[in-house]
Amino acid sequence: MMIMKRKMFLFGLCLCIGFSAMAQADDDFSAAFANKRGVYLLPQAGDFALGIDATPLLRYMGNFFSSSFNPAPLFNGVDGVNVQTIYGKYFLEDNRAIRARLSIGMSNYADKYAVPDDEAIADAILAGETPGADLYTKLTDIQRGSYTGVELGVGYEFRRGNGRVQGFYGGEVFLGYEGGKTKYEYANGITEDNKTPSRFNYSYTEVINGISCRVTEDKAGKTIYAGLGAFAGVEYFFAPQMSIGGEFGLGFRFTSNGQSTMTGEGWDSSIGSTGDLTTQSQKGTGWGYDMRLDTYPSGRITLMFHF
Image (cartoon, rainbow, N blue to C red; front, side, top):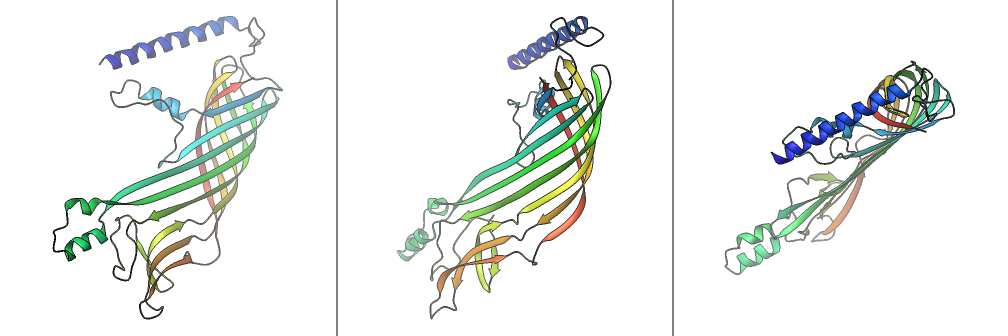
């Protein structure tokens, strides 16, 4: 309850300061939208602008009155992928600008799972003992995953409006890359006496080159795409040279998906009389590349700083 009261007090204080600053700004600006210090409310020809994705900040403010856990804003995407987007503009004229954006998404994780110690359990049984419960959770298998995505967009922007609210529209070209892989590390080794050792349930078995293998690496094919899109949005200048805006876009994207690669290990009984442990690799089903043309909708909320 005390934390809730503090949040409400801080939020109210921020609102009061914000409304006061906006009111003062309205009083200070002349019809030409320049204050007494010569600072313009709106961007002018030759100005630069830098911005970030404002969604995490708005999410944090939206949960301000919630009693649930509300940590400081982090620039996270969906499905555990951290997505950070930076925007930049250069104003050729007061109402025209060239713009660029760079989005980088990254994800790395490691999940650990307790598995039985097959060798220790077998030794206990051979010795006529009852295996202890701890032997069934003694070892650890690990699943590691990684993802990287990068997208660069460059466009041309037109603007309309004479007050704090500015409308804008234009077009852009973009280029992107995506790739990722999952690795599996097993505590129980494959041997002649134990060809199918215990492992965690998230791993899986594939027949690779005629051998039943437990997968050690599943690498997705690299995705490269390029496209052309149009956008339109609104930007509100809540203070001199500072704005928050939102935009929607629609475009077409040409995508090329490379082949995936899978690697596994299994017992090859065709080698000699006893067989041997072998590592096998194969490319994903289908040969060549998957090329397609699809629509590419987008939506963004930005916080921009002009200088």
